[in-house]
Structures are given as C-alpha cells and as structure tokens.
Length: 228
Image (cartoon, rainbow, N blue to C red):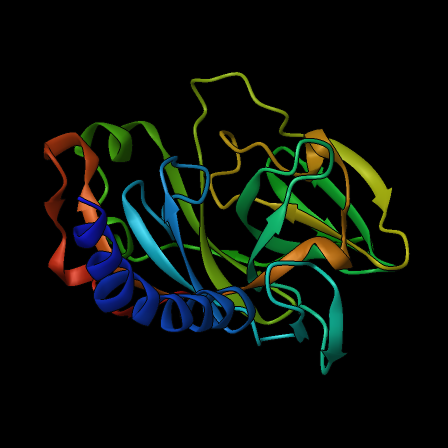
C-alpha cells in the first residue's frame, strides 16, 4: 500500500500540482466563468447560462484576492459586471446603470439618470425566443438605451416589485447596479451601492447554455453569443 501511495504521489499527483496552481491563478486573475441560476438578468441572460467573465476588463488583481495591482479603466454605463454583493459577499451578475456622481431614479419601471429619462423602444421578438412561453406571456419587454448602450429589459406587472425609487446620488468610488428583469432582481435598490473594489470583471459572452426546465437541454443558439 505504501509503495502504491508513493507511486501515486510521484507519478500522478506531484506533476499536476504546479499546472493546477498556475491554471487556478490564471483563472482567478484573467478570466472566469459564472453560472447563472436565476432569472434576474432576463431576457439578456437566462437561467442556465454559463457566462464568460473578463477579469482584465478594468484592472489586474492579485490572484485569489480583490487587491488591485493596476487599473486601466472603470465600468461604463450599460456594462454587465460580476460583483460581490455588499454585506454577504454573494457573487452577482448585474448591469451598471449609475456611475459615481450620477443621480439614479426609477419611475414606474422607467429609468432616469441625472434627471433624464432613458429612451425606450420596442424589443425584437427574436431577443426573447429562448425564454419560456409562460414567462413571455406574463412580461412586458422593451429596449432601453442607457447612455447610448441599447439593451433588453423586462417587467412583470403581475408581481409586487419596487418600481419607483429615488432619486439616489451615487457616491464616489461606487456604482448603482440593476438586473434587466426589473421586477424580479435583488440589486442596488435593496443592498445599496457596489464599491469599485468589489467588481470582479465584465460579463462578455455566453459560453454555453442549458434549459433548466427541460433537464438542461442545450440551447445551442446561445453558445458563444455576445452579451449586449
């Protein structure tokens, strides 16, 4: 038995330690994946999507920490980010709707930034084709242009939601984030502003997707699709 364990350590485990550490460090500092189990970012990101997170989008961090080594830019309005929820540290995928210094307000599910209502227009039916038919039937969809960044949003009139709030002034070094599913998202309306240091990176694309309601049946049309 001891001979077997020595062979196992020498020939299998020890040679894999360094590659494992290097791959883990690269994953921590450069790129990562985020599985999305909930519908708070519908219709942009669906339950069962696995999204690619670019951890170099804004800065470089020490692997396995949130310590910044270098920073080259800040999140922009409309960016989809992965961040830690203030308080309990849960990793979330949300959209930046308010930058440091902005005043953010919601009036009956319509977003106002610095006193100006963001433009809304009809959303293409193709943008919601992968959502469950029952959810599509109960929702209202629109294309929202956030400082020139057009993206899909939805509302669920039949449920209780915080559809009017603010105005709130975003403090320096913080961001106001929301889910695209405006009536079913735990976001800055509930946990407050996200500090810059708690932003992990930018969610850029869907790597793979499985329909949770149908035993994770692959949604191949969502594979490798860029997030808007």
